[in-house]
Length: 277
Ligand SMILES: [Zn+2]
Image (cartoon, rainbow, N blue to C red; front, side, top):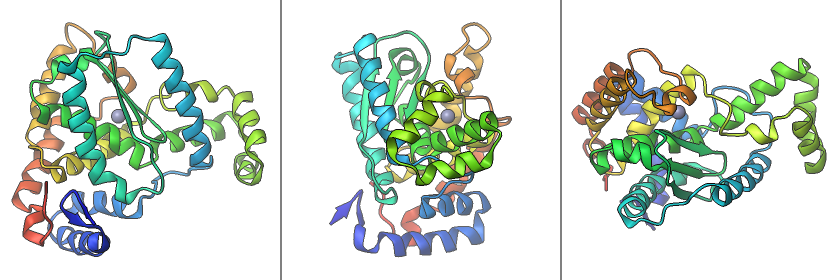
């Protein structure tokens, strides 16, 4: 079966070879591929992912009811194209995911991702993207948050912080789903999953880097990242993009992404026998 041009049966082997080759020349990318390959998280994920996904799905449905969902093809069509292309690249490295991409008609400059693959874009941030490559920068970033289970890590960290008792957090793994939900609700985390809790700078940098690799693998131009982020930063003087408050600014974001884009282009997956879209 072909998936984003990669034969799935050999995808893992090829990615392993890619990781090896990349690690020789690109430290950053090696880290990213290690994360992708492992599908693993860099922090503890104490809450069952299926539980977070179902909580998030409920919350996403509520947002769709309470906010204006755009049906304007000028927004919806490019978002679906970009979302599906990038999700195709990420999905083989995930256990279970149910992608959904929704445009909210709202001038706010923001986008978000929730555990389980629910992704929302506001028309405000889409207006700022001047091409589908730039849209793919934001989409890659959001898909990377889902792939790397950042929502779970964030909730777990918050649970540990509030509970102040590691035993409780470790213990809920083995409890039944209703009890887990009650514990989370008791700590007020249910309503904050994936949206309200800001990611750490570390998660933001990870999402930037893995997101850039995902969009590159999906056939988009990685140079779009520095362009888009520069524009976002210029804007933050006059009209504060909410995205920057829910996505703390990791220092040197533009320079970091410029460097990674150059490295990816100098060592494209094609040179390792992996076809991009
Ligand atoms: Zn982010």
